Length: 193
Ligand code: ITT
Image 1 (spheres, rainbow, N blue to C red):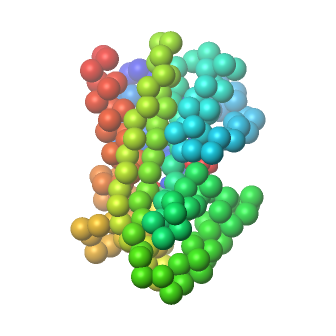
Image 2: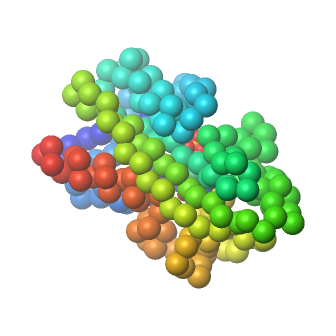
């Protein structure tokens, strides 16, 4: 099976994407190329950060790889936390604190519309490609469910009555922003085989 390095330090993302590509590709983590340093993520857009992470691996390790950047974009907060989703409430990347901050910023606001966005940047045989996935939904007034990660307990995807935090992993992985982007990546890779 063909091997591809997934440039992420987030074990939740590895688990989700590994299960989505299972049986077709062997997804290897950064440890397999002995990359232990923090990969810079300093651009101010989600696509910019995705490209930056993949470019870093290509420049320093010269291997085929893909990276992923994602975030929650809330309409009433003009797209915040967006590219800053992981560290919205501070550099500790604490999900519970991030959720509390979102809920307090949205207190009293009627517009609860939001979306998760994922951009995957794939470097394959000398060329860079990007794939995007977006899922629309609403931010609830309080947490529901303990599954998933990050903002999952307060995100209710449109057309469903369970938050991402209430869904089991298989359900979330079928419909999520990451799933949509991964399907595009998968279609592209399958056409290459
Ligand atoms: P990398 O090593 O891949 O950069 P990271 O956790 O720093 O991992 P990002 O910079 O892409 O990831 O930040 C994404 C943040 O957005 C993540 O920490 C969550 O807070 C939130 N997020 C992304 N996808 C999510 C999902 O499926 N469910 C809930 N929250 C999500």
